[in-house]
Amino acid sequence: MAKLNTIIGKFANKMDSTNVKLNQVVQANNKAISSKKEVKLEATMEPHHSEPIHDGEPNDVKSTHTSRDDKQPLSGDGASPG
Image (tube, rainbow, N blue to C red; front, top):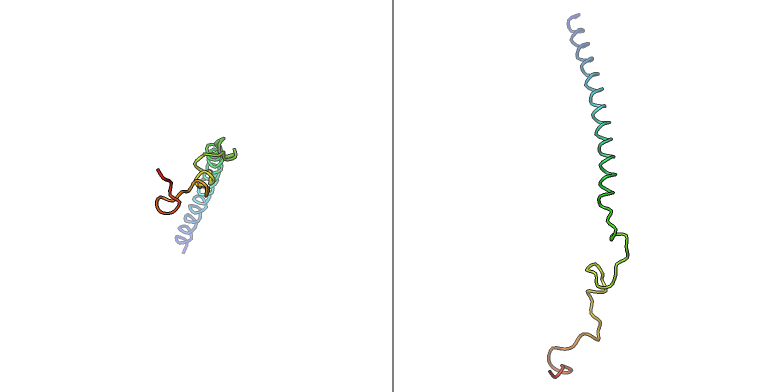
């Protein structure tokens, strides 16, 4: 029985040591993740994202639509003569 208690005691000490190391790794990872998030956010902040969209830019919805005045029938009534 004493031998079993010794083995259990060693195992418990090993687990405590492992838990301490694991907590240190988790804290280091959390710190690294936090610093990467800050760096990543700074890296993705480009000036044109904060500016309003101007006419003619690809992201401008208005530039992809044609007004009714610009549309002409290709053939038939109302087609342009030439």
